[in-house]
Length: 232
Length: 232
DNA sequence: TAATTTTATATGTAGGACATATTTTAGATA
DNA sequence: TATCTAAAATATGTCCTACATATAAAATTA
Image 1 (cartoon, each protein chain N blue to C red):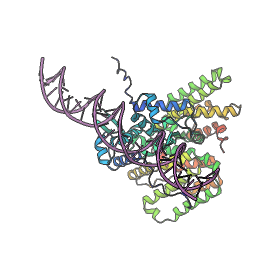
Image 2: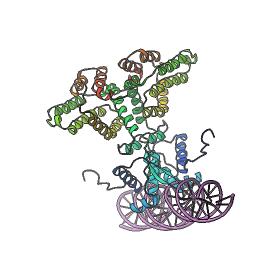
Image 3: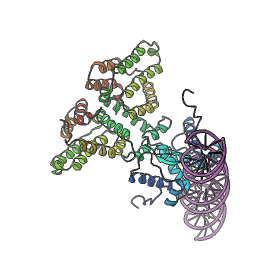
Image 4: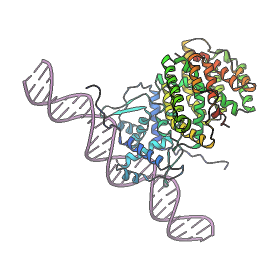
């Protein structure tokens, strides 16, 4: 009775069919735009009901692997890596551990992102960032209202992701925002300090303007020190 | 007729129901383990057929938001952020642009990861990494066979992700491996050079042993130089 | 030939029926 | 009474049929 007996196969039919279809697509090297066998044909070939096939295709459709039009049938599309994540990236759905992982991920990304920023920055980016920083500095609410501070914080860092020129990275960040917001409110609840490193947003813009990727990376690391120091 | 007419809403019923259920879960702050109304009840309340509800729930089940047992019904679970990505992370399914984004993401992660490594490393980690490096150095195949070199490359870097102590990051990396593999083979196909920076794996281990997070970060950046120099 | 109507077809939705697993209840046995 | 056993109840899992709907393709008309 050492441990448990083998579960044989408690995988649902839908899941099996989903896998089979995915394998089918990979093996046959389908190109984006190619059309797929119809639902009834798939159902017959796989030996399952059309319902099962439809549920499987519904999943693949959600992931962007296939698209379907009314009479044309289904055809291959380029899957969207983030479409699955997008739906569940919510503090009310995720567990504490996942939230912590995501928060750490943010720190990793922003420190590691420096090289991309220097490869792809242009003059208008620096101007726009400076505008955000100036607006932040001149906003009287910033001294008193936590929400206002958070809003500027998010606007500034969001712009950096946009600058990275990596659309996936950028979208990923924008859907991480609710989690950031939640985590930073939790932080500011536990400790009353404003949570700033010795490097300000203004310093970061200046580094971006006339510094190096290496300097920006270390300055960003410094800027995020309050968050890093919370890690165990 | 400036642009297009409004598309009104051609969102499928399944998608609408999926959203409604997700909203329902968020609003009511369901805790993990709470049980959900049954399929028939949901179908009646939403005014749709049970099929639609089942397709929606099938999607949520795939994302890990809910689980279902035969007689008990459905209950809330903590969603897995990566379960959606996992299925489609394949060079045969993704487009060129997505692959490029992912490849860049890898570079960003490994440079930014340094701090986590130094927070969570322990002695055995350094020993294990050194073992990998030694094995690599003494393997005669390494000089001639590209696949062997790639295997050591992947083993070494994979261990770093494991060291990060961030399970999400680690799993993410492991599912990125097929894409890495593909991209690096493409790289080595276009140019015959072995593609190494001036910092070796051995140097990285030494830095991890007796250096600082700052030094490791810059050494990693240096180690990855051949890849960075390919970016536009 | 070009515009229009018709038709055919694959997906989208609905609803009913039965299978299956598991909890609960009821029953039988000691 | 206590315990083990068998039956019923119930929610998900699977299958089937029918019809709605949109639209590409064919047929018809101007």
